[in-house]
Length: 373
Image 1 (cartoon, rainbow, N blue to C red):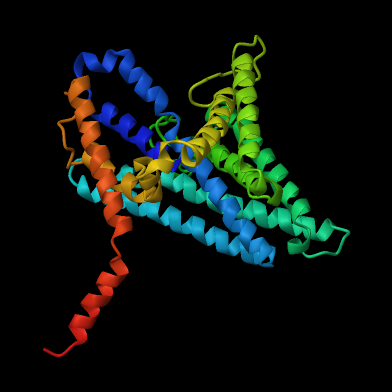
Image 2 (cartoon, one colour):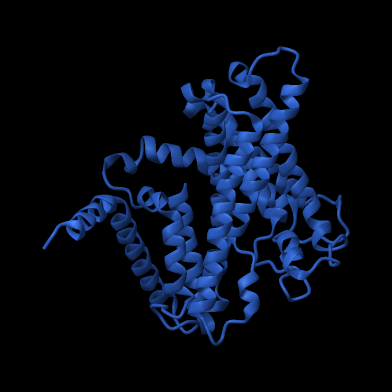
C-alpha cells in the first residue's frame, strides 16, 4: 500500500507542478488531483497499522503502559523531527525566495509524527484504565482479546471525534486566539488568516491514523492472523458500506453543520476515503498474495520499503530548484514523460538504498583507515 501511495503521490505532484496553460483546465488534471486525495490518507492509515503492530508486540512482551507510551511517543517524535528537518532543508535550498513562514508549514510528516504521539498517549491511557478497572487481575499479556477490544473501540471513537470536530474547528470554532503556528496544526490556517486545503492539520488528517490503529489491532489479532484474507474481505465489505453511507449522507437534506465543505472538512468525505482505504487493503493483499507481485520484482513493493526516502527526494526534483522540467509550462504528454522518469529514478534510488549493504561498505572503509600504510 505504501508503494501505491508513492506512485499516486508522484503523479499528483508532477502534474500539479509541471502542467501549464490549457492543460491546467482539463479533466485530466482534475482526475489527477482527485487521485491525489489518497496518498496522505494511505500514509497515515499505514502509520496507524504499523503503530498497532509494534504496540501489540510490546504489550505481549509485558511492558507497562507507561513504558509503551514512552517508547511509541519517542518514535513519533523522531518522525516529527524528520518533518521539521525536511522543512528546514526546503527553506535552505530555496534560500532567497522562500518566505521564512515555510519553516512552520504543517506537512504530512509533521502530522504523522504528531499522530503517533497522540496514539501513544491514547494507548497508554486506555491500557492504564483497563488495568485499573479489570477485575480479572491478569496481566495484559494474559488477556489479549480484552485489551485489544478496548484499544479498537478507543481508536474508533477518537477517529470519529476528530472527523466530527473538524468542520467547526475550521469555521465557527476556530481557535484564532492561538498564535498562527499553533493554530495551523489544528486547522491549517498557516499565516494566511483562513484554513488552507493544501496543508495537513490534525483535524481531519489524524483521523486516518487512528482508523489505521483500529484496523491494525484487528488484523494483528490471533484469529485474524490465521484468516487474513477473510479479515481483509470483511474490511472491504465494511469499506464499501462506508462509501455508500458517505454518499447517502452527502446527498441527504439533513445538514449537521452551518458551513459545509465536502472536499476539505466534511466527515462524509473522510468516511468515503476510509472506506476506500479498507477496499485498497484487500486489493493490495490480493496483489501481493496472488497477483503479479508474486512473479518477480515489484516496483510498488520496492518503493514501499523506502517511502520516506523517495518522498523526501522526489520533492526537490518536482517542486524544488532541481526540477527536471520547467514548472507550469508542460503539456500532458511531456509531464507524463517526466513522471515516468521520476518514477524510474525513485525505484533505482530505492534499490540502491535497500540492495547495497552500506554497513559492510562502511566497515571496510573503517578497516582501511586504521590499517597502517
